[in-house]
Length: 138
Image (cartoon, rainbow, N blue to C red; front, side, top):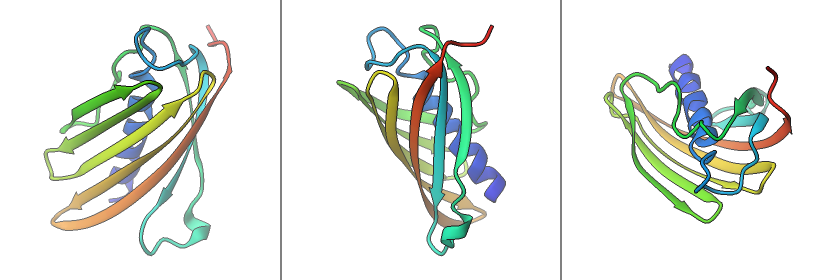
């Protein structure tokens, strides 16, 4: 279950990073980006809330996610200025929503998930932040 949670969470991180890198999207500079995610679940001890860092090269061509979690789809997406919001649904009943606000070379956001694991529901909240760390490596 935690493996699925991590996979879906990383999928969302890549989704929110790649969608806005479009010329009509929020102000976001192409380049190498580092994002940090911190997961919070009810009953999770603070010591287990270890930040996960992901690096990704983003260009103007990164309009949609390159990889999606099998069985999960974005059902709604909205852009308002530099803020992107979305909702998603998976075939197993897992749902989620998120919001990210960009400011040129940084972003902040949150992803809420309701994960369905064999009929058991688990709610999670993931805080995200990111920053451009330079040009993409070739």
